[in-house]
Amino acid sequence: MTKLIIQIPCLDEAATLPATLRDLPTSIPGIDVVEVLVIDDGSSDRTTEVARAAGVDHIVSLRRRRGLAAAFTTGIDACLKLGADFIVNTDGDNQYAGQDIPALVAPLVRGDADIVVGDRNVAALQHLSWSRRFLQRLGSWVVRQVSNTRLPDTTSGFRAYTREAALRMTIVSEFTYTLESIIQAGKRRMSITHVPVRTNPRTRPSRLFGNAWVYVKRSASTIVRIYTMYEPLKVFAAIGLLTFGAGFAVSVRFLSFYISGAGGGHLQSLLLSAVLMIVGFQVLLIGLVADVISANRKLLEDILYRVRSTELPADRRPDRPAGSVIWSKGRDDSREI
Image 1 (cartoon, rainbow, N blue to C red):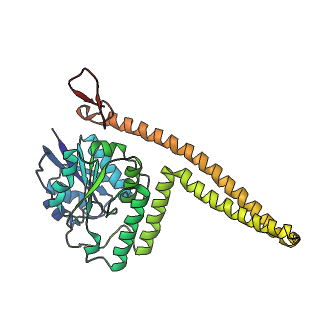
Image 2 (spheres, rainbow, N blue to C red):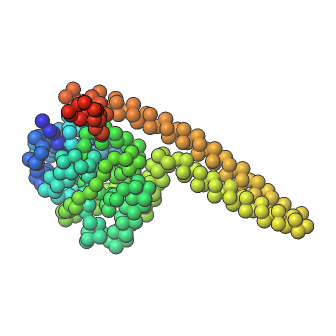
Image 3 (cartoon, rainbow, N blue to C red):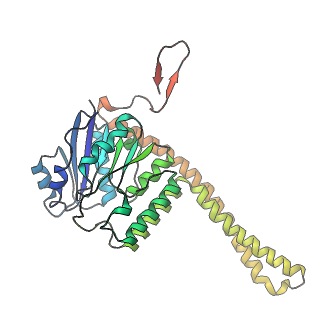
C-alpha cells in the first residue's frame, strides 16, 4: 500500500490554513493513501485548533518557534516514522495550488526522480517587485552552478520527495531548507527534476525575511556554507592559491628591484610577500584538514541514514541499498541492489 503524506509547516496560519487544506487532493493516481500532517511552529494563534477541526490526520506542535528549517525537518522525520512512501511539502499560507500535487508526485510514482520541485515561473509573479524577481533568478542561477542541477526555481517550497531521498536529507541551516536541500541533493547525485505549478493570490507578506538585503545576505551565507561543507578542498585551495600567488607576485617585484640594485628601499614588499605566501600555504593545509572532515561527515550521514531506517515501520525499512540492478549469467531474472 503506497502512502503519500502532505506536510504543511505553519506559523500563525489559522486564517489561511482552511483554504490550504480545502485545495489538497484526497486521491492521486498511483497512491493508495493520502494523509495530511500539520507542523505548528510555536504559533500564537489557533493554528493547531483549526487544523484539528479541519480533520487533518496528524499534527506536530512545537512548544516554541524554531524556524522554517526546523519545522520542515521535524515534519520530514514525522512523515518517515508514519510510514510515508512519498512526502509533499507545501506552505500554510495557500501560496501553492494544491490541485498541482498529482503532477508534482507523478515523476516519483513513475520512478523517474528522487525529488521534484515546483516551478512557479518567478518571472510571471506579479506580486513580486522587479528587484525580487531579479534576485530570485540570480539566486537560482548560483544554486544551479554550485549544485550541478537545472532547477529554474530553487527557492520554491512546493516539492516532493521519495522515502529514500527523505532518509538521506540532513538540514543544518536555521534559515531555510530550500537552498541547502538542493545543493545537498546535487552533491549526492540524486535525481532531481521540476514541474510547472500554479500559485494562488498572495495572502500575506513573507515572514522569512524582512527585506531583500536580509534575504540576499542570509541566502548567500547559506550557499557558501553548504558548498564549503561538501567541497572544502576546492574552496580553500582557491583561496590559498590566490593568496600564495599574490605573495609570489610581490616577491617577483622585489627581486626585480633587488637585481637592479634598488632592493634596499623595498623591504616592505619582501615582508608582505612572505606573509602572503605563508598565509596561502596555511589555508591550503586547512583545506586538506577540512577535506578529511568532509569525508567523516559522509560517514556520519550514512550512519544517520541507517539509524533513521531502523525507526521506520517494519514494512517500510530498506533491506538493501537501492539504485542499481545486478544480472548474473544463468539466471532468468535481475535483482535490484
